Amino acid sequence: MTHAISSGFPMATHGKSDRFKRLRRALTTPLVMAVVLSPLPVVTPVSVAHAQNLFAPALQVNDRVITTYELSQRIAYLTLLRAPGDRAELAREQLLTETLQREAAARAGMALSDAELTEGMEEFVKRFNMPLEKFEQAIAQGGVAMETFRDFVSAGLVWRKFARERFRRDVRITEEDIDRRLAQSGPDAGVRVLLSEIILPADTPQTQETSGARALQLAEIDTLPAFAAAARRYSAAPSKGRSGRLDWMDLSNLPPALAAQILPLAPGEVTAPLPVQNGIALFQMRAIEEIDAPAPKDVLIDYAAYLIPGAGTPEALASAADIRTRVDSCNDLYKVAQGQPEEQLVRDTKLVSELPTDYAIELAKLDEGESSVALTTPSGQNQIFLMLCSRTRELPEELSRDDIRTQLQNQRLGALATGYLEELRAEAYIEDLAQK
Image (cartoon, rainbow, N blue to C red; front, top):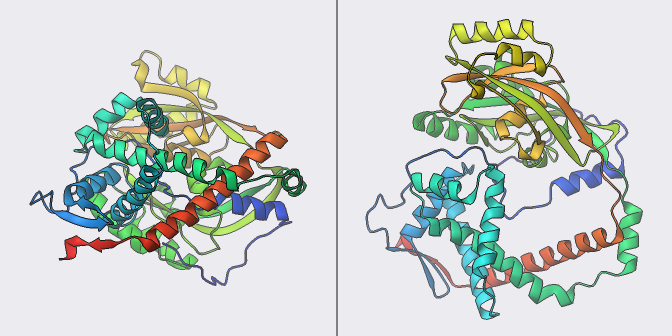
């Protein structure tokens, strides 16, 4: 967790406007849960009680008792998702909140149909780019029961259903409300940022534990020199030789969840630890400025990934250097891969939000035709020659009055639901039974 500080470094605010402030507010709206997802690892579940008396009570919320088993299952689930921070505390808070949400929905006679739950689970796993059945297999291999995932998804779904029904009569959007929003809206200005990075290795259970603890310490850094020194000492990224410093990049090139973390930072402040494939990333803001180009609605990335065996070996790095001298565009990689297995070269086009986090971060640093060999495959056996083929920006269309009405309704429903949940928590009987 970072703290607001006075870094002593000036913020670049070339032509900052109200549109820039609106963009900052839009990307920093609080989320109930924001977990950045990279491909699921297979891990040994964390156990709160080390398999001793797993069904002992751990937490009481009103008349509901949450067991040590439920708590350990949620921790294991969060571990699979690589949720940053104190997973035991996050699991406790989630289960407490979900209990209050379920109770409120049950009192109102709200329930989910099987079809609603299945649709919600399928929607959730889309962020993994895998079907529900494959996701179920992945979490089962990590020791997480399917009921744990169902409970996690169903709580959010039934709460939204309850909130819409309870508060919809309290939300009235007038034509004047829409007019005011239209008067305030306009093409948001684009933003570019100057960042530094630290990528900590996390390719084994041992390095995950060591780097996880170190990442929490590094996230507290609040000066540029201290972060630069840490990058030189700890970072596994090629940028460590430059003290972690990156060039200017458009904020829209970054994954939306990462952009939301970066935008509110003042110079010197650091993001929370961000899980990526085989690593943990942290970014420090050095400067930020508005640019003339409007912020795009979506950014479509055409990229190629060529696998070089022997990741990290002198032979693999020499091969990557040789390839770099022979290719000017992604099409040239087809000649390099000629006669090799089809999976050796992958070419794909995806929205930034759909890319694996580590790919999205690395591609954000590149211009068209540039390449990187900073990444390896999950197994650690292959170096990835990653090349940006093209980057296409889709500018936002003007919103209709109906679109704005829906936005305003959702915002007000969300605010009312959050306030009501705070009331439920204040009135609830909550006891930590594990401390007894």
